[in-house]
Structures are given as structure tokens and as C-alpha cells.
Length: 316
Length: 203
Image (tube, rainbow over all chains, first blue to last red; front, side, top):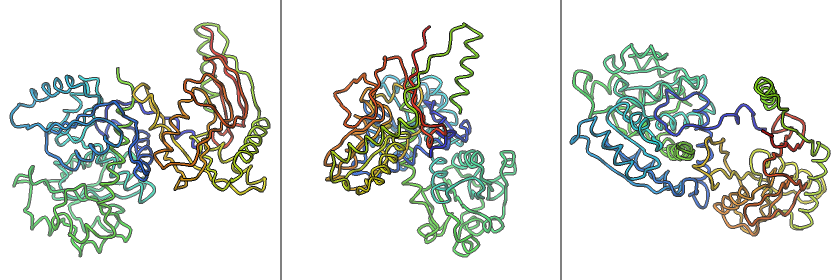
């Protein structure tokens, strides 16, 4: 009934900094835990006492509504007390920000800190200095582990397994922490990954990670089991990287015509917020193949699982 | 299988460091005794709950779920109205979160809804401090308000820390606080059904 190998692993990490350092077993452990928390969402009372008495600080140095809200709801459903701090990153230099951040959070007796920061490695910096649990909610162009986990969860839910699937990640890969975390997670769980985009945003160097690189989306779509369209990050774009919106849609946008190349059971994913009509045609985003809203719902289960696991173990 | 290997390793290490014997393991129940105990529980459940159609056996993972299934099939084999089964995972409702060095896998709970007017029988393998049963009651109440909740366990080893008693018990097993009850069930552990009492290690 229960697979003994499956139940052998026990969770031991207080921090979730990235997907890169997780084993395939740990990733699967989080996804299985999220199954249990998704069930909680179907109960009459959707709140469990797991983190009662713990204080969670949502510290978002970079703006975010979706991720912050998702973490906030997750924490509330786990009975943690939640404090939201939004800091402007412009007024302080990077080093000072992090040091001051650590001091403020320590003084506030935060048990769990969910950090979004513009600098890669900021969560690691805090994790090494504080006994609190640190959850990376996106750091620079480095990692966004909970996004990758909810993507993996959504794929597993629909396709029953991630292993052996062909996943195309399309768009702004160079600047994307979502892409990086997804690549690590997908490869660890045995998927085949193709990155698609203009050579300026998807350089061949990515092949070193163990993925394929293509600059022709029409060639990749027919064999894809999942297409994950990344948002074009206007705020990070510079002209020299980017051909222009019209040019991008013509070459890489998932238009209605191009969608005809997809297998009928190919999943369309997008981490949001969507630029409708740019990365994806508006009707396709709401269509039968789209699992974009599942991603949001599953994000809550994943974040509950991560907070429960990392925030639930004893810290020194 | 794995547990045996671990036990072996343990012995070897001890032989290297200090010549103390491995902890004593006393057999308490074999497969036949476990089966008899479950049959007795099944009969008691029917006696106490003549309306067996409204009974739900909610097992606590992993072995409680297996025990619940076995009791349910015994009740069915007696020609009574079959009882329903469910899973109630207590991990999210425990009172020691944040005090453990590592966490086991959480399983999704599953109860036949609505719970109103149903009799939920929590099924556990070893009844000990009562904290698991308290957490299970808390978990059940998040699904609704059952008519009543009862408690069944294969073994009651004593040492209650909460004012909770067991309604249906397979075997009362007096133990010392440091001792462990080791239960193996074929379908869960891949080992023959058996219960042992593992004596505390003398240092």
C-alpha cells in the first residue's frame, strides 16, 4: 500500500532558497505535501493550526501582488500571524539593505521570512545569518523556487508524472529566475527541456545546463507536452536584447495559428501576469489547454506545503 | 526489510564500541493474534453501533488506515451493512509543530461528506499519549460536525497525557515509558503481521 522508499525521507530544511540544491526526492516530497494541503482547501474549515503562534514576515523589496498575496493566504490558512513589509530598494545600497533587513527582522522576532529581493543570493545571505526560516520568493535573476514547484505540481497533476515529458520554455529566459528554477526542477524530475526565444534572450550557453536551445518556435511546438510562456519583462528589458513587441509576436508569440501546431493535450502555462496578445493570444490564455488558473490555485497549496515544512521544524 | 538492516548495522557498531547486547525485543502478537483482536474490535463496534451504515472508520496513516480497512472487511464478512472508511492525517493538527528536527510525509485526508449524523471511529495502531487522538478530533471537526466520535486502537500501551480514553482496543499492553511498541503489517511494511515490545536500551 505505502511504498516504503517513499515514506523514508523526512523533511529537514528550515530554508527554501532554490531548486538547484534540492534532490528529486525532496521536490517530490514537497509536491506530495502540497497534495495534502490542496485537500485542506476543500474542507468546510480551510484553516489548520499547523503554524499557530508563529510570525511570518512577508518582506518584499521588489514589488509583487500575486506571490505576496499567495504567501499571505497560505500563512493565514496555516494559522500563522502575518506581517507585510514593503521596502523601497532605491533608498539604500544593496549591502546596507540586507544588513538592515536582517536586523529589523530579527528585532521583530520573525519565525519565517518570505523574501523577494532584486539581488541574487539575498535570501542565502539572510539564511546564513538568522535562525528564522527563509523562503525565497524570487531573488534577482537567480531563482523563484515556489513558482517552479507550483509549475511542476500543475504538470504532475495533469500528466500524472513529469518524467519523460517534453517541456518548452518560451521567451525571456536570460533574465528569468522562473526559467532557471523550472529548468533545475524539470531536469531533476526527468523531463526534457527546450528553451525557445531570440538568441539574445536564449543564448546557447544554456545548453550547459542540460537543456536544448531553439530559436524557431514552430519547430519545437509539435513535440511539446507542455509549453510554458514566460512574461516579457518590460522593466528589465533593454533595447539591444529585444527585437520589439511586434517582431516578438511574429517570431515567438503563441498565436491562434501557431497553436494549431500543438498536440491536442499539450498544456499551456504562464506564470503571470500575462501580457495578453504578446506572449499568448488572449483567447488561448482562457482556452481548454490553458492551466494558468490551476497554477494560481496550486500555488496556494505549494506555498502552504513549503511554509508548513520549513516553518514547522525546530530551529536552533 | 530496511529496519532489519538498520538493526544489524546497529549491532555491528555496538560490537566495535562497547560490548552491550542489542535491545531486547519481546514478541507480543503474531498474525493470528492480531487477526483475533481485530475481529473482537469489529464485533464490539457493531454491538455499540447497531446503525452500521452511519459508521465511518477513519484510519490515521499509515497503519491505522490499513487496520481500518481490515476491520471494515471483517464487518462486511459478518453479513452486516458495510461501514465506510476514510483517512484522517493529523500532521497539520499536532501540538508539537516547530519542536521536531524533521517532518514525515503528510497524507491527504479523505472522509465521506457530510459528516452530520455520522459516527466517526478514529482508528490508530498504538494508543499512547492521546495527543494523536486529540489532533485527529481537531482534524475531523474541520470537515464538519459528526454525530459522535469514537476511538479504536490495536494496542493500548498506556501513559496518557490527555484526558482521552479508547473505546475499542485489541490488546492492553503495559509498557515502561522508554519502551517502544514495534508493529509490522504485511500490506504497509512488506513484513508479516507482528507486534513486539522493544525494551529500552541500557547504557
